[in-house]
Length: 79
Image 1 (cartoon, rainbow, N blue to C red):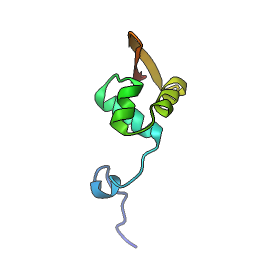
Image 2: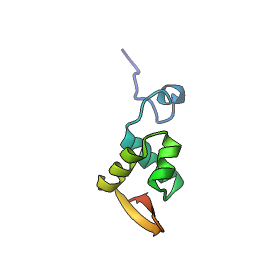
Image 3: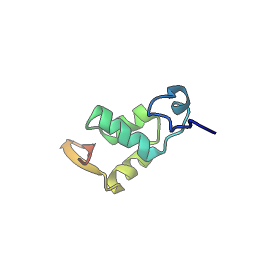
């Protein structure tokens, strides 16, 4: 074969949209795009169980707690 090249990012969006994301990929992408969020907000937006989101947020080293409002804890991706 001649002239084969690696596809550019977002060149085949219809194929990329069919890929399943891991929980961590989904949470990280959502936080980067939308800023600080609570576990409840993330669970509702990503349609995932809040308990799994909460555990991920507490244990992943890429995530940090940014503020608290009453019982709500907001998380962001470390920069």
